[in-house]
Length: 233
Ligand SMILES: NC(=O)c1ccc[n+]([C@@H]2O[C@H](COP(=O)([O-])OP(=O)(O)OC[C@H]3O[C@@H](n4cnc5c(N)ncnc54)[C@H](OP(=O)(O)O)[C@@H]3O)[C@@H](O)[C@H]2O)c1
Image 1 (tube, rainbow, N blue to C red):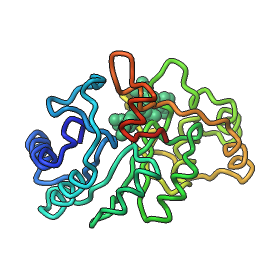
Image 2: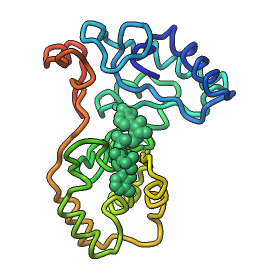
Image 3: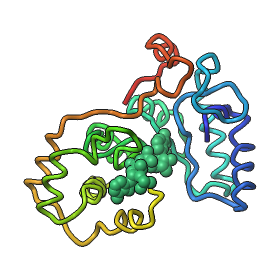
Image 4: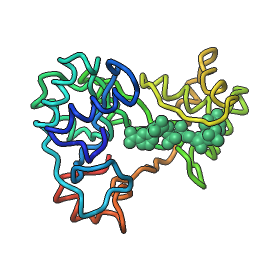
């Protein structure tokens, strides 16, 4: 559910519209995309800076719970929620979020968030598990992963995906190439050594997706984010 639908009275109509587009009776999982609301209207990316609004978390989550009760979403969850935002949500939720989908890969390992979610029974799904589409990709160009890849006879992508799987997370990995889709699914017949795991744990950490990058024209300032009570993960 995009930010412009993140209003208590728009959650259910937004899901019904998606179901109609998909020609389905229900979805397995419905996610709040970001802990941010935007002025109601057609979904747009990036969001106009002047359209950003604080989100009514309780109202929105009650509406998400209604989607579940009506059988339109088998599970409900969130995306891009920090531990602080999850704590806020857990304090008011009658049905806790099943999933938190966040940026996660060997270059942005999310150790604290993973521990928190494990403790609270929230499943983590990794997005951009290969570092996403960008000119310089810190995951696919990682020297540490490259070295492990050569030693194990697996591609760097497979090393990254298997590492995510080992953390107990699932992943949404994307490719427009048939052979890569196949490669990305063939990760289950081998393992990393303890030495490999240690090397990966020492990789310097960089986050790619920034909250401020969601806003146009010049991105949100620190002041905007503080006013909205949004913090980077
Ligand atoms: N919830 C959120 O806020 C959020 C944010 C970002 C993304 N997502 C979702 O996460 C999913 C994936 O994220 P993403 O596209 O950012 O990142 P990704 O899956 O980490 O990276 C996709 C890029 O990796 C390349 N690739 C795929 N498999 C490869 C392989 N085996 N070897 C080398 N390159 C490979 C793809 O190129 P080719 O197509 O040329 O193979 C593409 O450029 C998407 O479904 C997206 O919608 C969610």
